[in-house]
Length: 231
Length: 208
Ligand SMILES: [Zn+2]
Image 1 (tube, chains in turn brown, blue):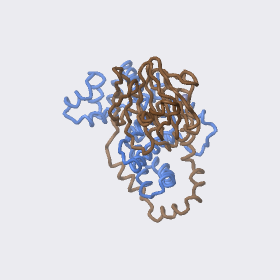
Image 2 (tube, each protein chain N blue to C red):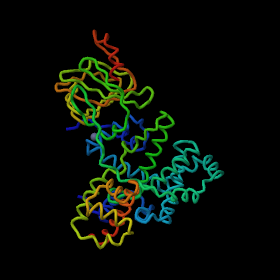
Image 3 (tube, rainbow over the protein chains, first blue to last red):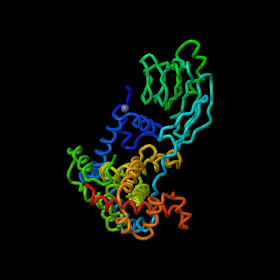
Image 4 (tube, rainbow over the protein chains, first blue to last red):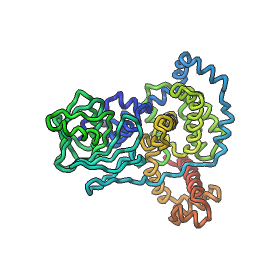
C-alpha cells in the first residue's frame, strides 16, 4: 500500500500549474496510482476553477491590478475580432488514438513509462555497477530529473542532500532506515534527511533533485562522483 | 460503465461543490459548450467567450505580467475550447473546471517555452483533459450496436452518415474509410466526431 504522499501545499501548486515540469509530472504519476490524492486534486481543481471564474474573484484583484487594467483598456482586445478568427477554423481535435505506450529497458527488463513521461526526451542510459540512470531532458537548470534503476541487491550509498530530492517508486520495492517502500510511494526528502535505499529485487525510480548528493560515510566520500551520476 | 448522456452525474458533481457560489450559471455554460460541439454554433461560442475571456485575460495578466502573453493565453485557451468542445463531458466535471484546465495547461506550456526554451507541450500528459474519452467511446460503441439506431443516423447530414455507417456497421477503420471515400484522414475523423456528438445529443433525449 502507498504510504508516502505529496503534502497538500504541493498538490495545490500542482493544481495552480506552478510547479516545474519535473515535479508536476511526479505528482501526476503518483496520482495515477493513488486514488486518494487523485480525489484531492479533482476537488481542488474544481474549487480553484470555480473561484477563478467567479465575479468576486476578479473584482478582488481589480485594485491590485489597477495599473494593468488601465493599460488593458488602452489596448483593449477586440473580442469580436478574436471570436471571428477562432470560429473561422473548421479544425476539430481528432479523437485521440488509444494512448501509445512507451517503454524503456534497464538491464533487460522492460518498463512501461507513466503517461506523464510519455513525450519527454530521454538521454542515453549510463551505468555504474548496479545503478543505471537515464536523464530526462527537461532543461530546468539546477533541477535534474532521472530514471534511476537499481539492480537486484543494489543500493545507493548513504547520503544527504543540499537541496530537495524526490524519489518516486515506479516499479519494484526498496527499503531504507524508515522502512519499506512500494510502487507509487512519493518520497520527498530535504537536507535534514539521510538515507540509504537498498533493493532486494531491483526497482525503477523517478527522481528529481536540485543539487548533487553529499555522501556522508568514510569510504563513500570517495564515491562522491556518484552523487552527480545519480541526480 | 458511463452512461452516454445522463443529467444525473452533473447534479451530483454540483452537489459535492455545494460550498461554492451559485453565481456561475453552470447549466448555461454546459448548453453552450454542447451547442458548440454538436452544431459548431458561433452564437453559443460567443456566449462562452464573453463569460470566460475577461477573466482569463486578467488571470493571465496577473500571472505573466505581460499583456501580449496574456492575450496569447486567451487566444489559445479559447481556440482550444472551440476545437475540443466535443471532448467536454459534463458528467466528468463542471465547464469551469474544464476551461480552467485548458487555461492552466496553455499557460504552463507557454511559460515553459519562455523559461526552458522548450516547445514540448507536456501539459496535456501531466494534466490530461480527455482521459475518459476512450472508455466512453467504447461504451458508446456498445450502445450504438445494441440498438437499432439507423433511424437516428439517417437524420445526420449525408457526409456524416457515410462515415458513421462505414465505421460502425461495416466496421471499416478510419484509415480504410479515408481511402474508400477518397478523403483526408483528418476529415474522416472530424466528421465522425461531429456525427457522434450529434448522435449522443439525440440519444440523450431518449435515454433515461
Ligand atoms: Zn497519494
